[in-house]
Image 1 (tube, one colour):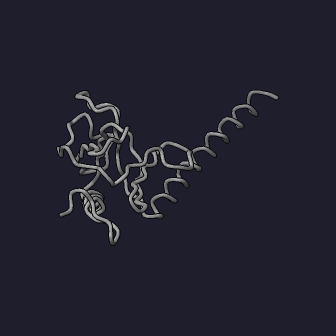
Image 2 (cartoon, rainbow, N blue to C red):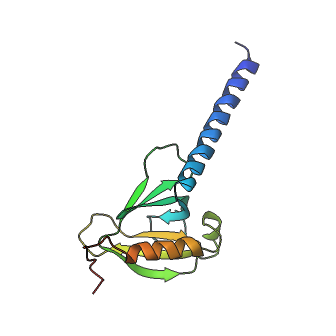
Image 3 (cartoon, rainbow, N blue to C red):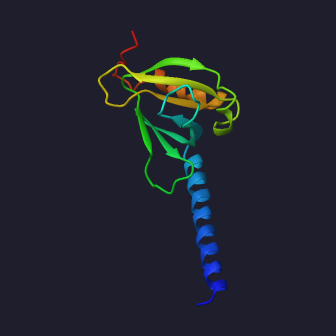
Length: 147
C-alpha cells in the first residue's frame, strides 16, 4: 500500500465524519431543536462555552454538543427545581462561541440536585421559548414558583 492510498483513506474517513456531524445537526434541528451554547465551568474567564442544540422533552431540556457523534444528549437539564439566578449580556470574549444575539442565563437548582450551576446562552427566539417552557407545567402539576 503506497502513501497515496493511505492519504485517500484518511481523507475519506474525515469526509464521512464531517457528513455524519452535519446529518446529526440537521436531524436535531428538524426535530424541534434550537441553537444553545452551554457552560458548566462558571468563572470569570469567559471560557468553557460549547455550542450545541437544545431540545425540549417534557420536563427535560436535552442539550447535544454540536461537534459530537454521540447519539444521546450530552447534558439534561430538569425543569423541576431549576431557577434563574442571573441574566446578563455576553462579554466580548464569549460571543464567538454563542448563537447570534445571545443572552446568558445562569441557573441553579433549588432542590438538592447534585448538579452544580450551569449557564446557557440563547438567541432571542430560543430564549423566549425556553422561558415559556420553564414557566409551564403539565396539567395537574404545580411548580414550586407557581402560586
